[in-house]
Structure formats: C-alpha cells, structure tokens
Length: 126
Image (cartoon, rainbow, N blue to C red; front, side, top):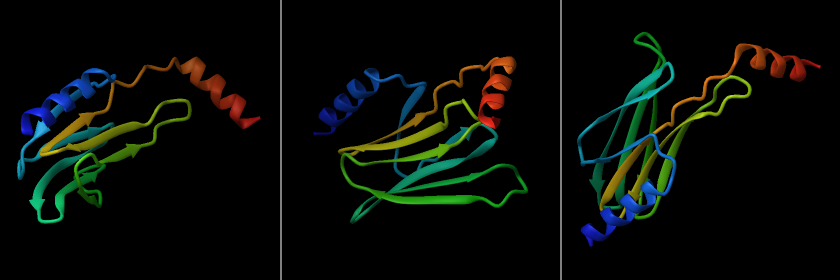
C-alpha cells in the first residue's frame, strides 16, 4: 500500500508543473520560503489523521502566523501569499496520499517588465 501511494503521488507530481516537491517524514521539519516570508512545516501522526503545522513570519522581529490542519488520506492544505497586481500568488501546498506527505514549493515567479506593470497599474487606476 505504501509503495502504491508513493507511486501515485510521484505520477501526480510529474504530471503537474511543480517547481519542487519532496516527501516529508513525521516529525522532520522543512523550511518554507514564500517571497519575503519564511518559516517551517512539519507533521505528526495522530489518531485522527496527520497533524500538519506550518509557521511563517515576514522577518525575525515579525509576529509569526501558525497554520494547523489535520489531513486525512487524499486531503491537502495550501498556504497562498498574494503578490503585486498582475503577478500570480506564491502557493505552498502540503498533500497527503495514503501514508505519504508531500510538500510542493511555489513555482518560480515570472519576471514582469516594470513598464508593463506600470501600464497594468495605470489601467486599474482609471
């Protein structure tokens, strides 16, 4: 069953545009970077599911924010950080497939031409 879950997750990730994904072991932390926001994610195995904890802050002196979710098989959670107008959000996804937990880092942010960004902002201001 574990082999099947890992194979399924691998095929699923290979079929999507994923910047990076890795398998997370229970109790082992993984660093998160979403633009200027950094933090860590880990999970523990509990009787009612896998308890995922993600803690993020925008700097050493900033108040951290903690997200906690208990995932059952096939469930996921997403942490999304909005960006400037016209830019895609930075999304960090944590997925559970059977007994496997995978974390997917956000894809690289496409560079937006400053002149194009100014044109977008001008259009929005009208």
